[in-house]
Image (cartoon, rainbow, N blue to C red):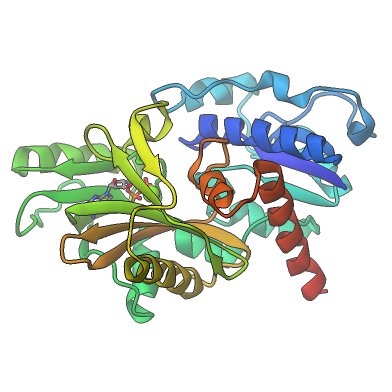
Length: 346
Ligand SMILES: Nc1ncnc2c1ncn2[C@@H]1O[C@H](COP(=O)(O)OP(=O)(O)O)[C@@H](O)[C@H]1O
Ligand SMILES: [Mg+2]
């Protein structure tokens, strides 16, 4: 098949997306697909005809993940002018020539449904879930509304109106987090009023929607659902602190165990909650849900990730490996179930 792997963009998760994109691209080439890797924002300046037949290694331009979130102004400056259009040169044309676009984007417009909407209107097929469920899952506030309505247990929260909102938590620790974030950017676990005040003001510099969530002390897990089936669970144990940006992407900083050491009942409970959360948000194809289990065994769903990381050390590839699927097979599986969505709706 002719497949565009779409990565990069202008989200705080840009760098991670570029690594996901490069890995998926290599896997697709390996399988025998005609693959092209594009940065959705920077596009391709060359001749866009016949790109699928070029003997180019598209993975060369990709930057490694640094310990900090990327400098998006520097990326914007690479386009050189006051750009109004999000899609880089030739991106739409090349995507329209593909059989399907593999969405290797994370965060912001890639994950919040906007690209999915544009692609629906432009007749471009893409992997993963649709625009509506992407938007619902991307916003942690609307996700929680759906969770509550469908009986998915999630930590209590309240919304802040602005950085000067004088609503204070009943107790500490608590969690201040932006509603439209990812990769733990804009997530703060705070222990006192001083930390709370500074977290609130930082959070509003990232997003106009900020929530304060009950802190759940316990073990952290994540569980992927693909095509209605829950995969083996991963336990996540950062060596220090919580699962923040550095602990997510710096090799060796977090112990990840898959399958997680849980008894059969606990495993079944988390997997059932993952499927319930997936359905509550009306997600199609695949997604990865994050959980904390407290010391009484109660399971709280934090969020659903509709375009989760796909670097070889990412969580979904580990879950797939635990059920005997290689990274290449996982990529092919995602393409197959995504294609099925288009043929079923034809
Ligand atoms: N309510 C909470 N209680 C305890 N830890 C939390 C809570 N919310 C978030 N965390 C920690 O912060 C991390 C990121 O939070 P999450 O809601 O999953 O946002 P993101 O979209 O940035 O991954 C979690 O993986 C967990 O380690
Ligand atoms: Mg998360």
